[in-house]
Amino acid sequence: MQPRLDALRRRFRPLGIANFIVVKFSDIHFKEAANIRYLCGFNGSNAVLLVTARQAYLITDGRYTNQAREQVTGAKVFTYKNGFSTADAFGREMKNNREIKFRGRIGFETAKMTFDMHKTLQHYFPNCPLVETSGVVEQIAAVKDETEITAIKRAVSITDEAFAKILPLLKPGVGEMDISAEITYQHKKLGADRDGFEPIVVSGVRSSLPHGTATTKKIAKGDFVTIDMGCLAGGYTADMTRTVVVGKATSEQKKVYALVLEAQQRACEAAQAGMWAKDLDKVARDIITAAGKGDYFTHGLGHGIGMEVHSAPRVGAQSKDKLAVGNVITIEPGVYIPDWGGVRIEDDVVVRQDSNEILNKSPKQLIEL
Ligand code: ZN
Ligand code: ZN
Image (tube, rainbow, N blue to C red):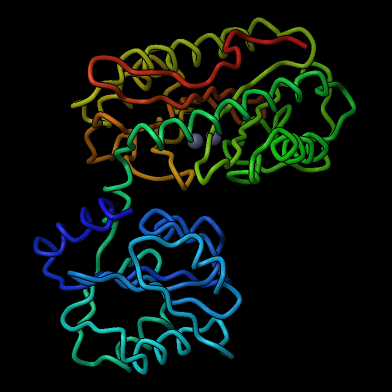
């Protein structure tokens, strides 16, 4: 963890800060914990990590005394008693604990700091101006080392296995929600910690919803079924989408599928270090646009994955990121035709020096069940 904390400290000067704070409250969704876990290993639901030029402090509550002792490296751990998971409890502990020493400007994450915590810090530490930052830890975490890539590979392989178990269950009359529940069950059965995100299972005309969640709708014969799933294993997440047809595909379904597949494969081949992410988006988008379906590709080509399912780099037309060796990104073009249906195909790809590595092994040719 030390190299990660040091990488963060190297950003202090350019950011004009002397400290950096990462907060996590238990009432915020679990995925928000990723930056604390990335920096010091702690994955409890409730903590503040304060990184100074020489020291780092993890403050959590009494429920996590043992867990913090086991998990945290690179930071001194303090747990407070009788406290609730509130901004005020953290603020008071930071103020009253004589061992926690810091001064000067504190960088905070605008996307993750709660308004309560911000007010509390201003109240207790009026001489430590708070400085807005965004994406600082995410940019560091975007470049994975081989240990992290191995962890992602494991998450991907469990996801592949779970998908293989799901395929035979896709039949007319089965509910989307049943499939979604089965995905969660299989992930855990096969050794994952849990889902990396709520699985997406959309069928028939609902497959035209890029991020629709499963409902009680029953799968019907001839439906496209789009499944977007990925487990979290060893702290890292996978993210894969496949679209299949339950029954025989119509010629229009085959045409749209072939188009998305071509865009996906070409983008997978084109991805390389040093390339602007927006140019990679363009590779896929141009193919879909040339076929007259550009208006139906309504989201970016992909995103980084790691401890969070959506992280840096962003891979879309508006992205300012450049692909680097060690990035792990998704490539997931889609075509969504309202009142008809949609197709998305998504793989996880490691950007290497002269090539790239597609991690998913699930078949990409159109499956007719
Ligand atoms: Zn996905
Ligand atoms: Zn994705």
